Each structure stands twice: as structure tokens, then as C-alpha cells.
Length: 308
Image 1 (cartoon, rainbow, N blue to C red):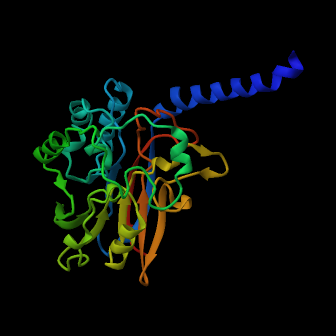
Image 2: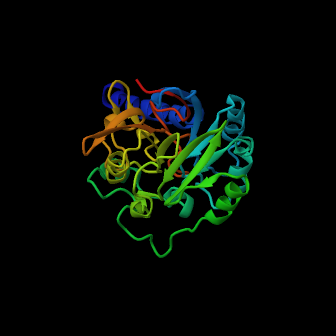
Image 3: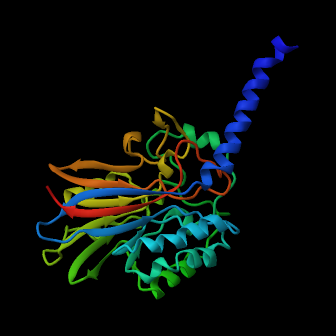
């Protein structure tokens, strides 16, 4: 009996333990990533930028809400929200409550597909198998007729009322102690709502510093921002791979970005120019796959300093 069933039962036990760890502990083990990025022009004082992403709020996630509220203690110069705030049509009030202290600071936002549409139960194996470019979730497809429409307008109105800039295929600027920070954003490329032609042309000569903001780091958007001369691009969407293998890393990015750049700071080149890219691993998960492994949830505090 032991020889026949010992190994399979051991595998099942190990799998159950891993699932318990990834759902019960790691998915709620919130971290802060600190990154220094040398992108500012000479003579400009450092800027502290807090990036929050992929909250995927579900009702009752009190620990996540407390942690998000606590981030206000970092006192950033401004906040960038790179989308996918929701994983529950009823989650808007809890998102706005959790981000309330952060909305006391200057900020800006873009939306992701999960802000517009609620998640549906699907086979998690499809996520790992859909590696082919263009076959990631809704990308390239129309939402299903029975898609769950989230109340994203209420989320938008809450952010706008707090004074955050709506960067949905739009430009905006923040004044930080007399410095003009130009922000250029796109709607979510994951569902082909990005319209770069509306914001093309590169940084304004009057701005002290300019950066690009997008939810999903698809290569077409990174190429466009970089070719136009933006020194820094912020994105989310990937969840850092969400299920990773220690000493190997992520299996997928859920877009056409390579897995080596699934989270953190990297470089992107296009048409002879180079930009820094920062991808947040986010602090949430789809409500139907509430697990993380070797990829804890995070927010990021970026300290922008003079370029080298």
C-alpha cells in the first residue's frame, strides 16, 4: 500500500500545501518595492513617485485596504495608478476608501480591462498556455455579449473629484513645487483601447520632466513612447507572472512583453532611443485565481534622480 500510493499521495499533499501557502499567505503578504531611476534633467530635485497597480478589489479584503491606506505614510510627491482596480462590480466604494489617503496627494490614473469588465470563471491552465502573441485574454477580441460591465464611471468620478488626472488617451501635467511634470497616458492595450495617435508628438519642450503611463506593457505602446523620447514608462498588468518558479521566474506576462521584464525596472529600445520601463507586479489577483507563488503583491516607490 505504501509503495503503491505513497508517491501520489505525497504529490497531492505537496500540491495542497503549496496552494494553501500561495492563497492563504503569499497573496496577502504585501510588500513595497523601492527603485531608484536616473531620469531627471541636471539640477532637478529628486521626485518620489508611488505606483499602485492591479488592486483587483473584492469585497471584504480588509487587510489589503488597510495596507493601501498605510502607503500614504510614505508621503510621495505624486501617485500613479496603472489600472485594474476592480475584480468585483461592488468594489468601487472599497477602492475609493482604500485609496482615500493617497488621493490627498497629486496623482493620475489609467484604466485596465478589469476596470471596465468583471472577471469570469475560466480554466487557469489557459492563462499559462496562451503564450502566443495576440492571444492574451480579451486582446484583439470584442468583449462577450454577456460580459459583466463594471461601474467604471463611478471609479472615474471618484478619482476626478480628488483631482487626479485622467490619462485615458490623454495628456496632463502636475505642478510639484514649481516643476512641471508632464504625463502622457493610454487606455488599455490589452483590449485595444489605446489610441497613441491622439497623444503622439513626444514630450513638451516646456515640461521639466515627462513620462508615459499605460496599464498593459504591450510592445507597440512601449515602442511608441520610446521612439517619441519619453525617458520613463510606467505599466502594470502582468502581476509579475503571478505564479513563478524560484530561480527561474515567470512563465507568462499575459502580453507580448518578454518574461525577463515581467516586473521591476528594465530598459526598452526603439528607433535608436532608450527608455526606462517600470512594470509593477501589482497587489491583487483575479477573484477566481486568488493565488501568488514566488511573486508577492506589491506597490512601488520610485525615486527619480538626475540622469547619469
